Each structure stands twice: as C-alpha cells, then as structure tokens.
Length: 231
Picture 1 (cartoon, rainbow, N blue to C red):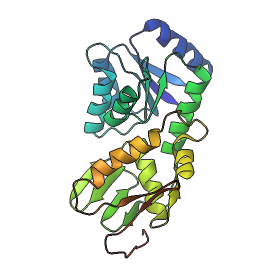
Picture 2: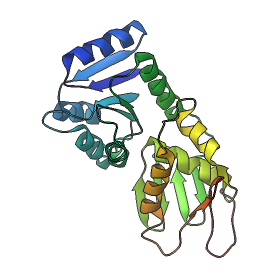
Picture 3: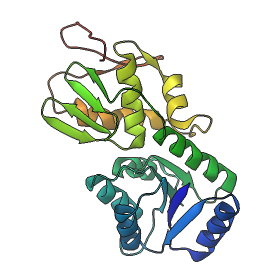
Picture 4: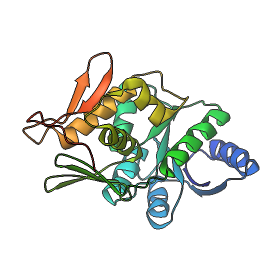
C-alpha cells in the first residue's frame, strides 16, 4: 500500500514508519495539517493515517477539506481522546475509521488493510438505483432527485449494500462485517453512520428511505409501497 502519514509527533511517526516499511509499504510523511492536506489533494494514496491534534490545520479540518475537494481516499484517524463525541466528530468530518492512542501496530495495519480491500472491491455494476436514489460506484456520488452527495468510504459501503439488497432488509451484523470485518469498534458507531446518511439523503426530503427494523437491521423503502429492485 501507498500510505500518507500526517502526524506531528516525530517519535510516533518514526515507529509507524519503521513498522510499515519493514512490512513492505510505501509511506509519505507530513508534520502538520496544511502539509498533509496539500499532499493528499495532489497525490494518490491507498489510505491516509491522520492524527487529530495537528499544528496549522487540525485532523478534523483536513478530513473535511479533503472531502469538500472530492478526495475519497479512506482516512483512519489517530486520536488520544476516546470520548464518543470526539469519535463521532471525526466520522462526521469524513474519517472512515479511528484508533485511540496508544495502539497496537498490528491492529493499525489490519485496519488499514481492511479499508484498502473495501476500496479495491470490484463490482460489475457502475450504478445502483432504487426509486430516485442513484449511487455511482466509481465516483462514490449519491444522487437524490437533483441533489448530489459525496460519500466517504464507510457511508459508500453502507449505501452500496442497502441499495444492492433493496427493498430487502440488511442485518446489523452484515453491515458491521462489510465495514469493519473482524475489527468492530466497542461503541455503536454503525448507528452514527446511519444517522449521517439520514441527515444527507432523508432529512431534506418529505419521504425517508432508510427504515430501521428494530433488533434486526435496516432497509430502503419506497413511499408508495412499490419497492422496485435496483438496476
């Protein structure tokens, strides 16, 4: 993998560099948020490792600005804060996963590999559609009527699974497996991702597509009860 590490602590950066270079990965390094944003915007990477507390531009701001620029490279955030509000803020800014410091380097590598595998997933379909929802597989752009929503890797994976199975129910366990494989977070992060999706594609409209099936999972539903299959 080609990785970008944005971390102002040189000791931590050195440890990560040594570990990943030994394991055959290629790394670029940025010491502050502005430098990290510039590199991530101009060069292709498989995954970005982004510290939250950075000089010049915070990790939250870097992630948000990259998503605004249309950069959909998976982002794993490193944070010394394990409060749910901080973690949820990271996901809202555009992060796809997180690790709380101190962390095991093998777990970090496993998380990065999982993000990379999901991004490299090959599908024969270029678009998935259900009602007036349409997901472009290549650009990660979701469209509802004339509104377009750029999705980060995690939200894209959720919508791709919901659309490919609509109107059938997708269980919580299936969604967790699709997003985190064997590295499910301790907190109920899935619910926060669904909340983000609802704010994007349901809240501005009269009809809500995403329906919660209590104790089971989620499904996409049509307003008039006619539930067309995606094409």
